[in-house]
Length: 413
Ligand SMILES: [Zn+2]
Image (cartoon, rainbow, N blue to C red):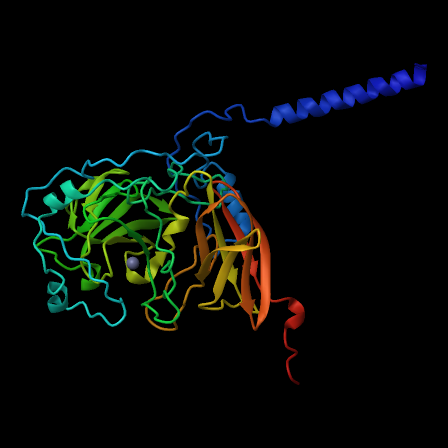
């Protein structure tokens, strides 16, 4: 080796060593360490939040929660527990509660008058008996990731699922938040998500807080809406962008808490039921922010931690000018096969409406999507519009479906 090439080798070695030192200094010394994080109140930057602000807030100390756990590195294997016959909650005194018969009535056209509701009470099977007879459902989903979860600082997965995580508990596919259900036979616009399960299944608090409403003899109807049936509402201990947060659990067979009671995340607060205006036993679950009203709901699946090995796709379908297109079909395609279909939110001009998330500004969401690469497809003015999106564990991926700029019509003179 000549003198000059030796000198070049020394310089190269020094450069590589310097780069390694630089990379090491950026490594998080706490990576992989379990650190509980309590949601903190982010800095308020006003009603409209540019993405730069969100990112700044998110990565600052006062931002949304940072990841709290070391995520599993291996593929999740669905547990194969045997069916057991344990009741899903402690038996209640026989005769105290009655099972309501499941009647498959379309939601539209049903008026929730006391007489109509009474017609649902055609049996008097004590729920305690029912609980003893109902085998515990076999888990069909992976467990949920722990909360609070914000691997991406824009995410705010602060709540646990109100029905036990390893049950059949995803929102019903055909009636997601903001949608009006089947195209042929539309339902009222949905202000929450429906999680179907057996009557008597335990319903849990999505987060720490105080019960501000629980149906009782003194307060039989929540906010003048008999269609909710038996309801529990919790005001949570933490706020988002200085906005208070509530979660609502409707159609309960019975609340297990009373107004004023303090509850902790995961605490049993009620039993799945079929009260009010329903087509079968389920929990109607809402997230409300800013005010505890019908007009201030947001998509709950952007607040509920996804399952292990699952992520979320939030997106918007807009016209050439960027205006939302209501009730458009959106397909989720993987390897040429359609895996799921949803429709965009329906924003009606008057009265209460559903709301896009303050961070994502979406008008559709696919929740609990297995990690992978997908094509998200819609049709705008007869033209197929698609985007490819990667789904990562515990993270929201955003996609916008918009016709090309070139298609903007030239204004007439
Ligand atoms: Zn519902």
